[in-house]
Image (cartoon, rainbow, N blue to C red; front, top):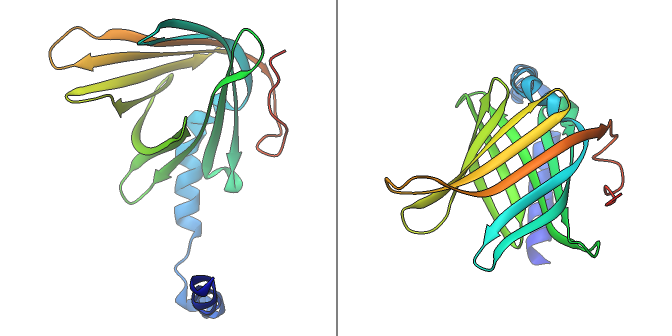
Length: 189
């Protein structure tokens, strides 16, 4: 509580600073919006199937994604949910895709299964790719292809020079537009 009391006046001082002292945010926001434009194909509600390999074997699920812009289109927000055969949620993830004009780089800030991380994201002509560390000397590369109302994403585990091993696949169909992030969760059906 003491932190909040000490922090609040500092925030107010920043808000009270003259407009001339504030950097012009318009060019930065415009660059962010422009960088998000190729990802607009992701916006909406998606549903389909997915599977993942775990130490216990392959798990097949019904998977959904809902995607929408935030902050005037300068960010992209993504929520993924996987449903078990009994209808319960077996996986839930939330991500924020952003673009840093100064670094000319995209980033995915992700929360899933009690973990969080920041990962470089590469926008491709028909989707995107990103990587996650997966143990000593290992990583999982996720590559998505989106177009024609279809979204396919695969995850390949790579260790050294060994051949990649497919550990994830998602095949979704666009279901509808969405007002999300303001809307409700996507149901299983």
